[in-house]
Length: 287
Ligand code: NAD
Image (cartoon, rainbow, N blue to C red; front, side, top):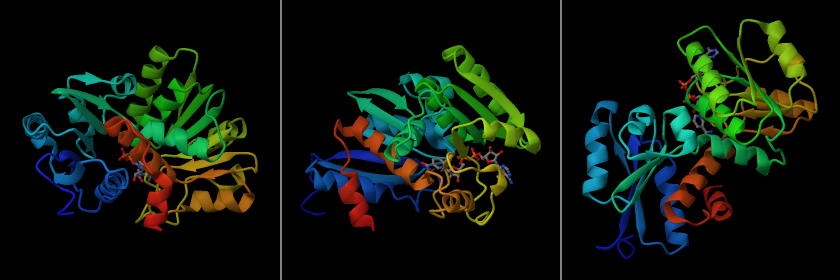
């Protein structure tokens, strides 16, 4: 490291809180070193209300780019100079690219979701998705799937503060991609959930259910699954949720959340550097 970092090293950052557990510094620094890029990546614990100062600091220190994590993704979108088309629709960003002082916000969570499916041999174009969830991850993957040509998206959510979000996403997709059929249903309507899964190609859990401490739980009755259904999860801790295990035991194609995490990071790396991230090498190193 002491040989790698010099007076000319360009800085990339992660902004949000908490950030201490993040795998991003290890992943990006490994990749910069592998590709001989004179960059370094550091995480900074920043609260939502500190984001205006943090964004000013990116400009002042000519930070080359930054990731943004919870709970700062929405406020960050209001502080940059320009937004990518998906970020404009979603109103949240997880990546900032600094082009000589002009900050552009992007959101790569949905890109990572679509790429994770692709890596598992599944295209979203022309497909019907059932997505349980209406929070940050759900919104990003619903919008990206619509932009990438999904035929229909049925959103289910429990009756909480996120439900209205699903209806907002439905309206936004209707405006941006009117040809995509988007419906929103209460998760409590299990008969509807079963019927929608029956006519879907891809089922996605984009809630926190399945994530520690809710591991071992699933929102989908295993009887609703069938072998030719593709089952994806956004949860990456644990690596396999109960939903993914139920689906695997039926022989379904599965796309667990760890792949989405890797590919959203890889998409950010490309925005940062213009290069493909050495994902195979990093996965081998991490294993
Ligand atoms: P969020 O807080 O924005 O949304 C939470 C969602 O979970 C809402 O839809 C809420 O209604 C639902 N929910 C909460 N408790 C529930 C319950 N008991 N029953 C049913 N639904 C419930 O969260 P988020 O940022 O969207 O994250 C969701 C999951 O996705 C987390 O596990 C997160 O780690 C993961 N995630 C993964 C990636 C990735 O790259 N793989 C990226 C972002 C988030």
